[in-house]
Length: 174
Image 1 (cartoon, rainbow, N blue to C red):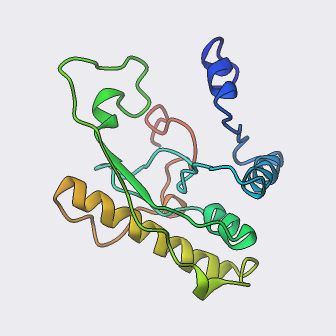
Image 2 (cartoon, rainbow, N blue to C red):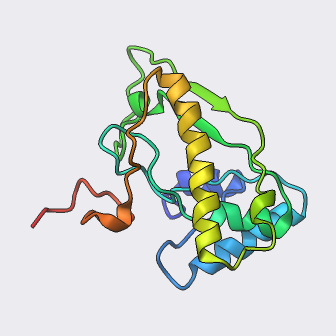
């Protein structure tokens, strides 16, 4: 996205941090995020790290970065959920569907208390547990918007043959 003419300029101007996912350079984005938070700025992070692979667009298992950022900086995390953007621009779509108009709903929850996990930013099990707690809060918000219950088991990309990043719909199944 950052390389696309005009779009790249706009997102850079908006202060978005490029993330070179699944690479050694990914740590640079993490360091940049810490600096942004320590400077007192807001930071929006998608804890899944990519578009959901769940076929019904429910939140999937999150990555631990948001929790680690919060535990390291003491900055609160406000869970957010949205429903409707997928009608305007379907996942991996290129052309927005502006008509007929679609309702977009965004809900923001109360800040999450990660005190139970304070001091455990290096403990993988604690980070997974705290991240699942965060994803539960996001899922609850989305259930409220959609008026339906999410599946009992959250989609886990690590337990799937789908690629963890990128447009999984273009990948040919074996």
